[in-house]
Image (tube, rainbow, N blue to C red; front, side):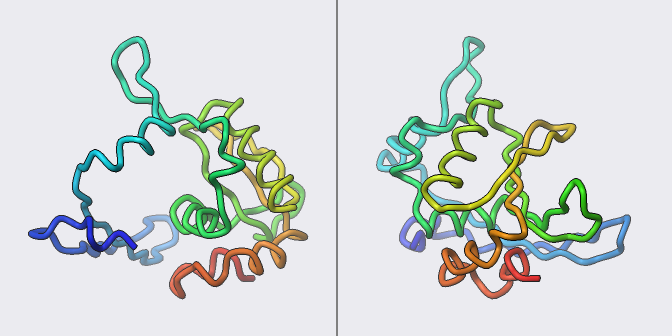
Length: 160
């Protein structure tokens, strides 16, 4: 979908990193897009400039209309991680890492997941902020919603 906007002289970069605690290998890819005015309207929806001139992430008030099943799938592939219930020690659900957002923004995102996508969620406090936990009982439904948009290498995030 973004291929027409990839910088021509840049290639997709693949990176391998190793988790020092588990010695597990992780792969990632990245690419650069062109800075084009057509992206500005999206940037204005999701970033504000604070009093010091810094860009801060925000959730736009009409996120319930903008977030689609495909968008949810991309969000999971980017910021999703296998979750662990606070009561259970097994990895059962999915965390959406929303640390860059305010508590109010995370509540708004949680509400959209609950109401629009009929997912059971809760908020988990973390050192870096809040993240959304999608409960195990919603994982089958979540998989039905997004699996057609998730690349094979990321399916582990929504499958036991």
